[in-house]
Length: 289
Length: 257
Image 1 (cartoon, chains in turn cyan, brown):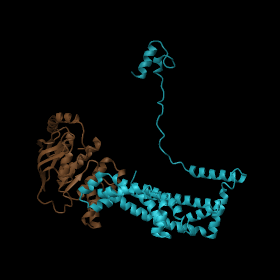
Image 2: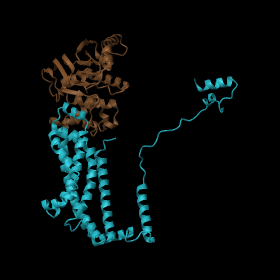
Image 3: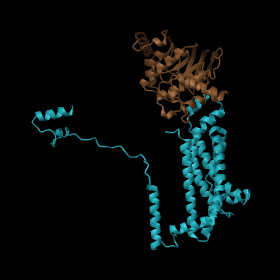
Image 4: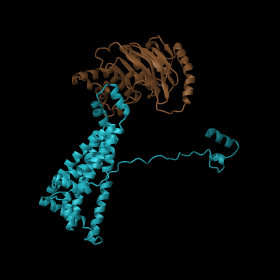
């Protein structure tokens, strides 16, 4: 029955159409369909992140200046900044940063390359999977910091042990991400490659590796963060220069302003690495919708 | 080059999927294979292309492949199987790269094959930018680029909407008239089979065996819609399949065939 039908009947019976409390008349009222969609979709909101960050700094500074936050408990951001300025002026910053970045880049690059190679092997060969996967599961959860004394014995007190710590730390998450990525490559694409007579190596290089790339890159995000965490741990022993060494020295001297400056440098490093990987993702995965 | 199947049978676990298939595909001929779902049509096609091996029987090639054929048995897949990270051009290039062609020769083949399938303007597009019909055209272009002796088409139009399907069928007819390619065309769509097949092989429900082979001698170009004779053939085919399809529909799926 259509709306006009009902109202025609209602008026034929001498009842007023619409605006009546009777159930029959209620049917004739026109109502918009209530909206129930929307939400559950992240939208890009600019400036809110930096604003929250700035607000915290301002509150913190105000608290320190007014004495609400004791200087012993937490130095003011301005003091930490002053410590940072001194680092720049004395030229110490570049020494520390240079030493740390070198360890980070060498260790992480080696760890990533080995991790991708082993992850590919696990993904491609059942024998490698059966043999290596339990090993990876057993070794991944060991905090590499606990092995540091061993690394010192094996690789020497110099750069070797520090690079090795970062290498092992970034190796395992990469293996797991890569082998998972290989497992998730669409098998129908592999069949297609075979049906066109592509060589095994071509299939790995042109189908498996690009197909696993999203997983490898998200593994890179995780392993880069782990590498930065381990950097501080690795510089605990016998490092003269390095952001980690600087923080530890500041800590043992209770120079909390310097400690905060060092921590800020670490977190800036994390932000920059994350941004770089984001750029790499956008470039390498531009084929994704 | 002719294709010959002799006594092909296959069993997955406890279920026999194919039994005693004998079939010949002559040069320049489109052979459509139809049957209810789960009758082993696609499995049969995988045997023909050498992606899987049957338990019994053999798949034989008679004669040498045409000169310059890079991949005599070439598939066109239902899900297109295009690499999402390669452009249209790159996807065609992929299957030429392992054959020792120079970059210039490759470019020549790619340009030629994209022109023949009307894709020249889409050379640099990524698969995600293309409609389903265009994706399948790319897959057909890719198949043509290796100059196949036999095209193995596994429900190539099943993932497309019915209008796109009509357009692509016209394309295939036009292509066949120009190139006289040989094809094994698996489908569950009777209209496609009647439109494109010189020979229609009807398979029975599992275990799939050949129930009947219907030959249609009318030229592909003359097969218009609402053709009384073709409609009659399609009706007969449906009569043959109807009970099988109903029974197959009620079967429990206990494996992945």
